[in-house]
Structures are given as structure tokens and as C-alpha cells.
Length: 45
Image 1 (cartoon, rainbow, N blue to C red):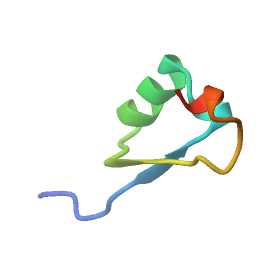
Image 2: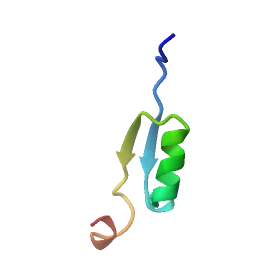
Image 3: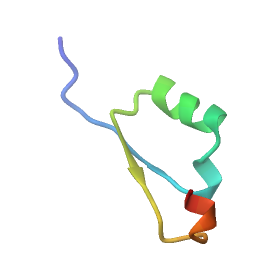
Image 4: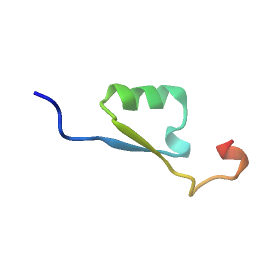
């Protein structure tokens, strides 16, 4: 049976390292949203 529920995760300063992103994907994340509300321009490069 196909899964109809989608999981949307938001990446920000606390979740921007590769290990955390991998964990989110392994946990079933379908879509990743980027949060640019925090940090500086250099942080987001």
C-alpha cells in the first residue's frame, strides 16, 4: 500500500549538518524546507 502521508522537515541552524539531514531522510522525510529567518548571509552560503 503506498504511503499517502508526507513528512516536511525544516532545515535551520540546529539541523544543517549532514548527519542530521541524513537522519531526517532515513526517518521518512519527503520534502525539506529551508529556513532563512535565522543567521547571516554568510551562514547561508
